[in-house]
Image (cartoon, rainbow, N blue to C red):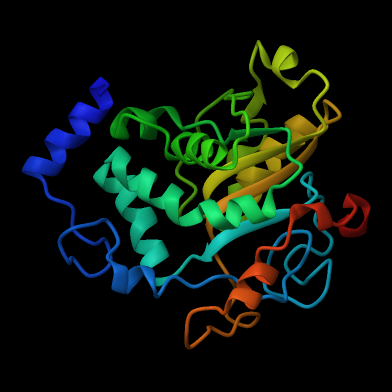
Length: 265
């Protein structure tokens, strides 16, 4: 067992896991709350992943999106939101591992044909606070579950304010020119066609879009995948029960069906 495994074991011994949603002891998300995780509805925009029948939808129409497709495992509400919040503010790597296990089926269904998995670079201050970048832990874990290679290819050129609480325009300004290729990225990206960028939550998509823009400029076709995605109340009607296998498969439709970028510009 490595040092990280020993540390996680130590923390589990002295700080037992409790469900992030209901505080039931035993796991970061108990079986009852995990059953309440809500998958995105089957009818989604094939470009940005928002619950909508049209592509482009009301959320991405007129936007210059650099990624050609987006998918997420769950709606950012209830247990999914509690788990993401716990990962960010309790700073336990094991929470990210649990998120990875929950999202792995959706990732595998959506990301066939991808050449490489990468992630949104961590904010310097947040990474120092937590001791890790949760997007990297998710990206590496999901890549491993799908049998795909993973590597860091992006870096932050500057560290702005927290994105939470900002509207779309402010979020866009906050991350404009904030990302660039790492020095060794050209070697990693040689002969690759499709790269998926992983993050924990898709809110407005601005952070992911600016990351995708950097890859797009190298000739890569960027896709994005997140553990959860915010939805507009006007476009989404929550399910009363867990999704059926058929609807789940449809809601995790492969990013191979991504819409040409020009249609959303």
